[in-house]
Image (cartoon, rainbow, N blue to C red):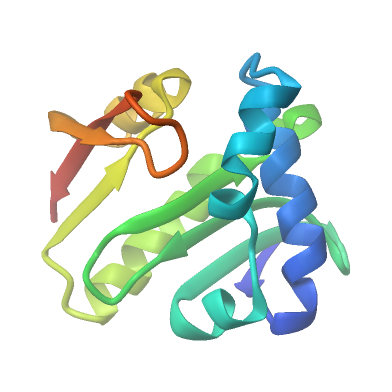
Length: 147
């Protein structure tokens, strides 16, 4: 398994991975449709962030993570058929290295409720709630980690 920076041409494969991973948390088609724009990975988004992907076959991402220059983790997804194989920890190690290299002192994210246990295992704490960017009235756990 290798971790590399995503390129613009990876956007369609990353979008497919993100949708599949998100839906594996039990969300129905209506929920996924409401989140489609927010979950879509674009070449512009890749170019403007540190967007990493993990792959064991070139061009076939098994996981991805996106870190902004402000320390916000905007994506962290693992293919459902490849969960619990160390890909999340591998991506996490690379994210931490990137954050430290860029002088980021605090990481933040808005977590899917199903992912809170993973982020807690990585050292994050719930610090509040944030409104969903896709679903009116839905709130997400806001989490933070001081490096």
